[in-house]
Image (tube, rainbow, N blue to C red; front, side, top):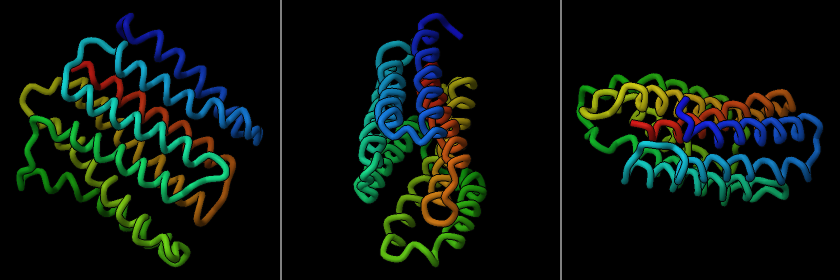
Length: 216
């Protein structure tokens, strides 16, 4: 890993570890401090430490991280679920736009969408009976999430996109998809402290990988 990325990657790992330990111990004040701090560190790294990288891709990734940071804060107890969902939907839209740069949508990319649609449909089917009034916003968010992951998968076909950047972004998108599925199941169906830990690992892996994809 280049020296310019080492400081923030190490700081991210330390802060994320502290947040995960706080979550496992049900230390709410500690979690409320370290969760947004971890995302803030990744945001700072994406904005200034990851080199090389250029606009507008970097700007869209930073925008996505900024919206994610807002979502982190909004979902802390007492959680403002719908506001947090909107914030994370904005983050997914920013990432979607970043992954679409230089990669226009063409019919040949549609098969890459299928795995995410199938997985998203399975989650919706599983959660549908317990969502109640939240069915529409959750369905809308999953739609945006699937689209974001699809554009990350299709980005490998874009000329000028480095292979490492493509792989990092796709891995990050898949980790984000996994984290959000775990979050939805944990929140609406099966509350679990262990699942929360796995969700957090996947979430910050996603954000860090996407930030590192700035190196194109």
